Amino acid sequence: MSNIDVAQWLEQWVESNLGDHAHVGSKAEMHDQAKACVEEALAAGISVAEVKDAAGGDLEAYFVERQNRAADRGEGRLDTTGILGSPAVVPSQPDEVISVCEERLEVGKREVSHGKLRVQSHVVETAVDERVSLRSETVQVDRRPVDRAVDVAEDPFRDRSIELEEFTEEAVVSKQARVVEEIYLRKEVHDRTETIRDTVRHTEVEIEDGRVSADVGGVLGVREGSDNGRIVEHMEVFASDGTKVGTVDHMEGSDRIKLAKSTSPDGEHHFVPLTWVDHVDRHVHLNKTVSEMKAG
Image 1 (cartoon, rainbow, N blue to C red):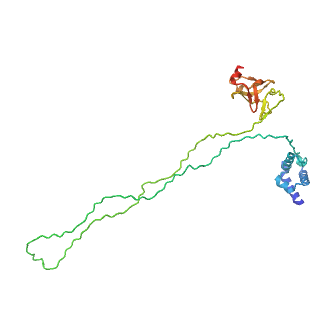
Image 2 (cartoon, rainbow, N blue to C red):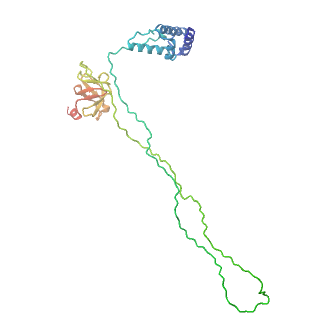
Image 3 (tube, rainbow, N blue to C red):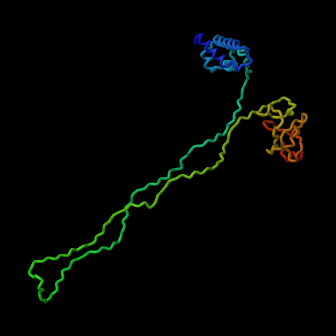
């Protein structure tokens, strides 16, 4: 990137971001500070293209993030004290780190085939019997003897011919297709609720603190999430049998826990001596059961 390109980009960046930095006295001051940052980047071996791409136009965020990463690696850091009036904060380097993790149950859904229902049709021939009444004709020749005089009008000696036609009935078969039934396939949708049961894991950290602590009597094992093992307001208090006995109202002196009366069955304040406390994590866990507490 040439010097001209750098100048144009800085000018555009200042125009876009001037309104977001009310603590900058003038446009010229902001431009000078941004230019100084780019020059420091070049001196540190960082290309302007890298600054422009990584910053996405936000010089301040880029340099603070880069400075923090350099501090994490123990490298020399780029001095950005003058960048837009905001000094970068370099976090302290921890000696050792234990990551506290937890699993979270995520339940999704997927479709699973339970098989198909198929309806197929095919042609089947079936023999059928149907009775029908048919008529047939037969011409018979009958001869009978007679003895009578010939009629004057008759000409008995001429040729004559008579005929009679026979008819018979025969079965005529035709077929007609008829729709006698219709079959449909349809789906019925039913909603149901299932309870998914599984196990998830999380990390618990136990801190063995041999120091005497006035807040918890110096006798407690401290677990992660306990605000450094201190008993504080609104913590839930559980007996050793797992029964919730109340909620912390506040510490009464250095040796008693005062329980909130809003969580008490009789609506009154009750006190738990610190000697009954087994350990503190997100809750206060006692070393006595409910019956032992009542007896005490």
